[in-house]
Length: 387
Image 1 (cartoon, rainbow, N blue to C red):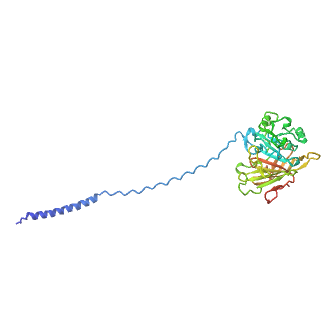
Image 2 (cartoon, helix red, strand yellow):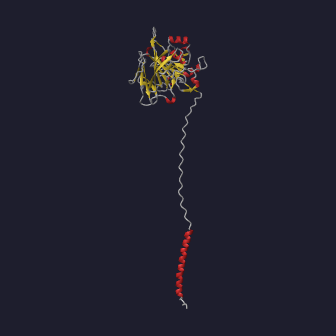
Image 3 (cartoon, rainbow, N blue to C red):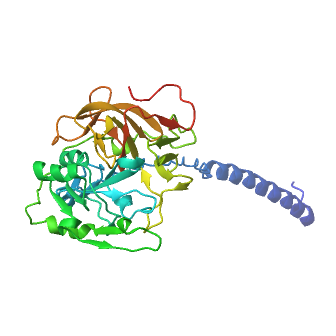
């Protein structure tokens, strides 16, 4: 027969069984939970940053186009000027160059300046004005017959006060257009100065002279024929540093009893020559600025004393051809000048037979008697004396 178990023992056994069941259920639920667990999503890989686009190259600046409408190139200086000024007749003014006449007025604004001997070893200046127009020019002096050769070749009107017998004969016979103070032409005035002789005090107003010509029988709307050509403005052949080449400084000694000398000194930074007389720069009377030359053209011309002339006046032959030298930008170049007849233009040619190439700006033409040497600042490797 079954033995009845004590209650206490059953309970203890039941507890053990219950614990076992709970442990089994825990294991079962653990396996089930693992099999139903949601897998973790992998972390997203970092996105690659796209490379920044290369910057587009900046467009090259457009070259500035300079309008030349209503302008023409000045055949004397190469500068672009108002076409009305480029087409009027040039004025060639005869200027005194005596020590009492210096400093001059208005020469600094000339397009081209000629310098040549007169009797006694003095020189005359002949500034030529086409586009340049200073208010006052002077002191004005008399003309010589060989000045007419240059005036006719420029198709200019000569502004002067009197002249030699040969000059008056040439004006009459050749029909040279002039504004002569002694004939009551043009607009002249005296500017007396203490210690200065009367003959060195005459001046003229250039604008008035141009106005007198405009609309008169003297007016001609024709450009002077070119005496030379000009270098391209963007590539001018100049020396801009201390290496001033073979033409740093030079002196021209004009023969005669006065012992007149003029010196040119190259200013590399400014790319022009300063003109000196004696130990001082040659300055404009009104502005005080030193006179400069962008080009110096030396031309050797046959020169003689006129037989039987009591005043010792000279003769010069500008018809034909001769040796010359272009000095510009610290450099020199042999040239030849040519003038076919009295009314033909004076022209300068390089060794290839082309018109000489000058810098844009003011040119001084120094007329020297054949055989006159140039005095250079330093010994030169090759000669540039007249042939």
